[in-house]
Image 1: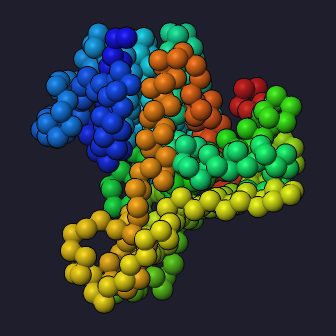
Image 2 (image 1 turned 45 degrees about the vertical axis):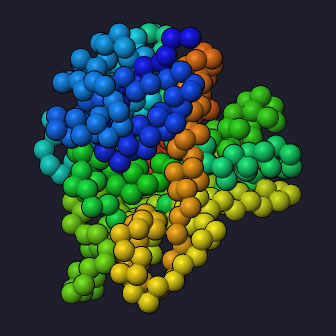
Image 3 (image 1 turned 30 degrees about the vertical axis):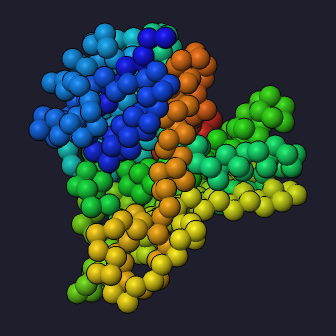
Length: 400
């Protein structure tokens, strides 16, 4: 079998996780054929570290290479849409990080975040549809890199749901930490939204995935999102916080929210309550609870207690990595054990490779990515209006 060639676009955090996993899959006839990054020096350092033979000058050069079969997009949110179209039109399969796409206010004056959310909904969904259409027309797969779908806890939950034959009555979940330090996360033009999009895509995607799965095993039809009610805000604007001399939480958010809450109503009447925020100290928290008619499942993706540690001061553990977003290594902490495996990254990449090799759909596909974009931007519209919004009504109104 000829080896599948992967071209990685980007050389940051997620690109490193993917490159490491592709390296572990060498026995499965896949190789990272090249990398491209906005900064040539960074791309060359990345290539050297992961044994990648070629550094491309541009994304256009990478997608046109005969050595590349899969284009892995590990780039800022605003670049997902144009680069996915570029790759699909070149006949390459696409792996796209979350969120699939969004609204970035191209050509608009700042602040983009104050734009009508109805316009944002139409623009973001239009881009998602273009990505899906380009993949279909060119006979390639659009694979949505939602690692929560592949996390061992969620995979176990799927099997338990099937075994129970119960009804998922409610899903509760969220992701929270003390805030992103990257500049792009603080402006709508670069990120496409705040905590609801950047962090909420994970629990929202997982909830939508599980309800779709429940519908398929029950009667062969996915259970989908029917309506959304949400609220968002920048809690670092609270006057007393702004007067505090010590800022443990990230501040300086421009036109995006750092707190969000959303209620999803599914087509069978069940509910999902999902939260995402940048105002939580003590390390990252990623969780999902599944309330069944005949059981209950709690999934803790990022706070495993398999290794509990204590130190009277932070210097005891030196430079050893403990867990994401910890403010201090002093006191009691939960030291992550094989964090990437627990979060589903290796399983995700393996599924994408095998989906291409076996010409089958991946577990997490572009349709899931589109559904997440639709729900989140409906959430922004709901927050703007201060009322529940029904997806069918929004889509009909925008088209009509």
